[in-house]
Amino acid sequence: MKSHHNLVKIVLILFITFFTPIIDENSLQASDLFKKNLGIATWANDTTLSGWRNNLGWKTHSKQYMKKYEIENNIKLFQVVSEPTRYGNTSFFIQAPGDGCYNRPSDCNRVNGESQKRVEAKTNYGFEGNVWVSISINIPAEYHFSDIYNGGHFNKSFVQFHSTESYFGPMFMLKISDENGFVWVHESAGGHLLIPGGNDDCASGAGTEINDPKRMFCEARADFYQLMPISEIKRNQWYDFVFNINFDKNDISKAYHKIWLNGQLVHQKYNQTLWLDQNGIKENLANFNFGIYGSQRDRTYQSLYADEIHFGRTCHALLLENIGYRCDELSSQDIGKSNPFYIDFRDYYAKD
Image 1 (spheres, rainbow, N blue to C red):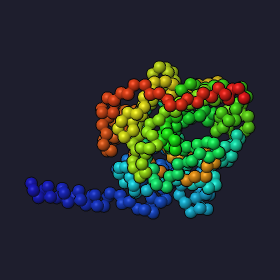
Image 2: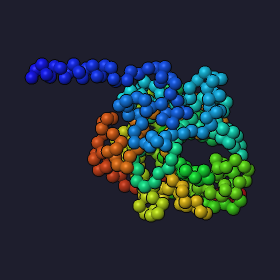
Image 3: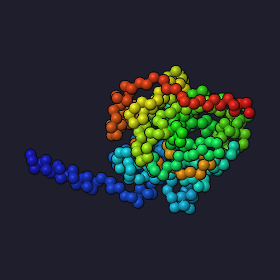
Image 4: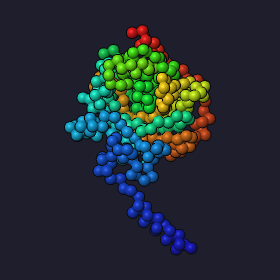
């Protein structure tokens, strides 16, 4: 019997030795934002991405412009790396330089004068209903928190739950603010403010033509919630976010959004999440975006690491036990109703 156990051990060692993938730095460097699987699917037993629809995969805008910038500047804007990781073999390193603009013209030169930089991946499909999503973020020492520039703060978002309808904006954004730390921005709470003839400032990311009438769908308001003050955010440290959102547009009374940060419930709100259908538009769903997105006008540099980016219809699908959390402990928490520290009512767009 003892010899049998020894034989089994030898077989297991040989299997692990010859069949476990070795992290090849050259292969890691070649994996990037432009691949449908973001370069992760080739790594067995890795958990950087989990639960997403691999058959549809991920996509990004501005592929040709970003590739051109990378070649000219000998840089990778989005790549798979072997360290640091939150768990497993790999994570993503994402960087957004402050010089030039490496995105599509409609982002670099918007019709209202804005210039946006965007290094992010988005699901190539939409979803609705009750979803659970996790992501772990690490902010390197090189990340530049934007100072006040010409009277404004240019904070960057690293997570967006965006509408699949191009003329609708994001429902939610998770931002890093130099004033308020981690901030959850909710733009679909008040639904749409309809502006006849459209408004280029209100819906600057929609369409490509000045005064496009489809720019009539303006967010009625934006609610801002602080999740962690800037004084508590440290460099080179992992922050684990878990989102539970019910994207229900048929019964708004059932819609809600909850956020756990490092295992603690820090946000809980019951109100509208997904945009309502408008003027025959009925396929507007939610998609998930992660990376770096924000104004390019401050000319600053940002970078971050992202790992454990998981999707599921239940908490248990997120594999949170790998990073030290239990779903029953998370779900048992209750903090009552969260209140925004600031509300931006957008009715001024209708008065212009």
